[in-house]
Amino acid sequence: MSQQKTSRPKARLPRGFRDRSAGEIAAERALIDTIRKVYESYGFSPLETPAFEYTDALGKFLPDVDRPNEGVFSLKDDDEQWLSLRYDLTAPLARYVAENFQNLPKPFRRYQVGPVWRNEKPGPGRFREFTQFDADTVGSASPAADAELLMMTCDALEALGLKRGEYVVKVNSRKLLDGVLESVGLSPDDFARRGIVLRAIDKLDRLDRKGVEALLGNGRKDESGDFTKGAELQLDQIERVLKFVSVSHFEPDMRTSDWGSNFKFWERDFGNTANGAAGLAELKAITGILKVCEYDAARIRLDPSIIRGLDYYTGPVFEAQLTFPVTNEAGETVVFGSVAGGGRYDDLVARFTGQQVPATGISIGVSRLLTALQSRGLTGDVEPLIVVLSMGDAAQSFAIARELRAAGLRAESYVGTKKIPDQLKYADKRGAALVVMEGEDERANGKITIKDLKRGAEVSKSVESRAEWVGARAGQETVDRGKLVEKVREMLARKG
Image (cartoon, rainbow, N blue to C red; front, top):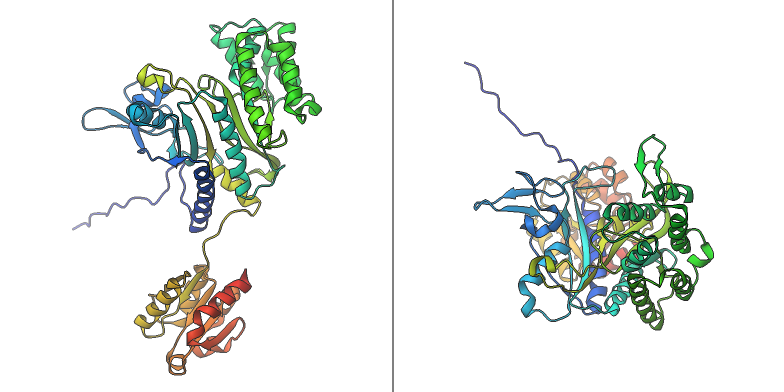
């Protein structure tokens, strides 16, 4: 009689997702707590929205086929309604504001942190699930709300340990960009060419002036031979666009100057359109507040190459970038780049209510920022762990661990095998800072033994008995039982 083969699932991780270790989780938790304290110090309050939203609430990701799988992860519930995992934290905020508008204080100021999901092709450093930390002010059209977010972002980055000069928050205005496009003769209805121009400006960090000129003109062929259609602007139009962006990329002296130099330059050439004048007025109001509050152009810089989403933002846009070099997956030294972005989006709530509600916000990419901080040695660590060895009396080891925890220390009682070598190997694998042991001899004499596990791996490989372990005196101290907590704190302080 043949035996039926047991079918077992294969242990494998879905593409674009990842498991995370205790160290990374602790570092992320410390990062989030630091940002949270800064945001709450500004008066922002927390909000949580569910992971799932009705798919039609996600705007441009509305399904147009039998299964909505373009950009979002979706499913149908039991009443045949499409639900999708949230793509970001802003669309759920817009739904929440529209649903609760009458009962909310205006402006409504909230922060939210949590995972978001994107049904996109994964790649190196590009995951389908990642964490964002957002702050938004809804219900205020004042440029002061934008200025506040800029200052708060600077404060958060510095609270995380970044020094001035290691980051810059760049600011532009979509209204000013619209004014530039009007000045070169591109009407608001010419969506295709306007989009090409904006994408060309957005590529300034990756292409030289010649490459941008090609995209503004007839088009550009890249190194692989692929051709990208251009905006087909005339030479005088191309020069006018390049003149606008020259402040940030082609004239370094102007890039690092004060805000006033930028305004004089733009006002002369682009302030004669309604949108251009409105954009300049908003930027002047923002920088006026920044100046009074002593946030200078070295920390917050005007940069006309900042575009953000083509159809999403309606006013000031901003992007926080880190300026120091890191080594990428290919072993190349590159500047780290963007870790946060946002801007004013006055039309999002109107999708639900038909009524325009002004709003502005910024989103920090937590996972990306964490990677940058780790490269600088600025991330928080797990509190040091103390493992209490089990020496025949489990209750006693639990009592010792409880005493350490009551003193505010992180301690656990070992619950596995009774063999000392195995217990030491366990403590070493756990990354424990210290082990505590109270055997019969120690207990009879009112003593307790504490060992520093800095060399735990080497010791655990050679130790075969308790006597041999006690004999390995390096980093080990035996003290009066009543001085346990005092001695543990002293040894942890020596370890830093």
